[in-house]
Amino acid sequence: MTADGDVQVLAWRVAQRARELVDCQAAGLLLGCPDESVRHPLLDLFVPVSAGYVGCYGCSQETLRALLRYEQVRALLDIAAQSGRVHWCEAGPALRHALAIGSVAAAPLERPAGVLGSLLLFDERPTAFAAGESRLLTALLSRLARELEQHLRRLSQSARSPAPSEELPARPRLALARLPSGEGGAGPAGRRLCPASPSELDQLKYEFISMVSHELRTPLTAIKGYASLLQAYGPAGQGRKGGDGLPEELQRHYLEVIMEQVSHLEALAGDLLDVSRIHANHLALRCAPLDIATLCRRSVELIRQRVERETPGKYAFRCRFGEPLPPVWADADRVQQVLTNLLENAVKYSPAGGVISLEASVLRDQQAGAGASASASAMMQISVCDQGIGIAPEQQARLFRPFSRLEQPGSGCMPGVGLGLYITRRLVEAMGGRIQLRSRAGEGTRVTFTLPLATALPEAAGRAG
Image (cartoon, rainbow, N blue to C red; front, side, top):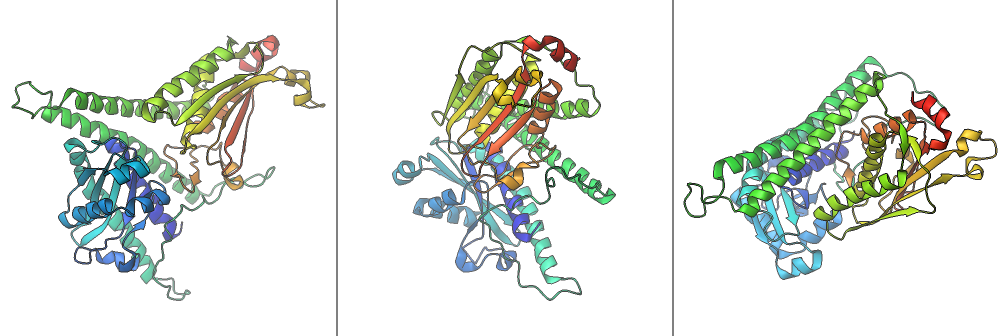
């Protein structure tokens, strides 16, 4: 990966860890420091003093640039950098009306040699960054700043120490407006990929361990932080003076965050177990006739309720069935798992909101093709469609591979360990169906999978058993 991409990925991870820790709407990392008196010397290699800040990642570059136009935000960043502490404030009328932001927080990334940059966090709630959130950020800042300094130092050393056969390069330049496309990927259709060498396998193992460790550490840090706040301050009125205790509303919010992170850990553990079962051929299915229309509506409603709590009014969910649907032959729990994965991806890849629809219909003979077998027509096709950022063709080839996470301009490298679509594909195939994706960058995505109808019970039962 290039110096540009290396710093961007790190910056995105730093911003994401801070955002997840305090449960705010968005966070971005601003590399740089306009104040030369507290500026880290390493920045001279990457960010000119005249540039002030260079937005890295975590939220869109457009949002960061828009925030920096406001004097209130610039002043907050200056105060945080000069004091070395987290500062936050309620958004003024201009910021609130223009960007629908209720509060903003600035957290400096400072090392003994100086300030490397600042985290800029914001939320639509006017009091999203109370004393508890500030303490959590403060506890995390030193570790994040150390990681950033180490990466920048390695990049500067590599730039100063070229290979003997190379000319001395110019200082590393960072075009921090986008994340690079993932390298590698599947070859052209029909081509068999060469087996990975031992060194490549070792690298894959390292990347997997690193990815899973990050996914475990982030929720554990949040759980530990909020639990420690509840333990330290406790409920108001329980042997504590005046307002030393936490208000009931704040306690409830902290507990909700803890439970959300516990659910995240449960989902991660479940995905890893599923991959283990798939590779050991121990994936057990309990197939039976299944009312697919009812299951689709229930899955959509569960996702809708959760998304509406987090971002009210941003998404609209639709179920579209052109006719009464016959039952399918499938495992109800596994089909719901497939639908949940696809609906969550549709939300994840639609940062601007919009309509997310779930469609289902019987696959007719003419749709199956003239040369298709009789069983091909006895299928149900289910599609999840969104109006999101879409997926570039060069990235689609590796979509259903394990541990593959897509990198998208405007949304970054998506969180997770990259198992959802791989498990989805293997579950659909185990139940006798197939899955395919159609997407164009900027025009949304349609993922369609098929399941056998229960009218083909003997054949379906043979496949499932």
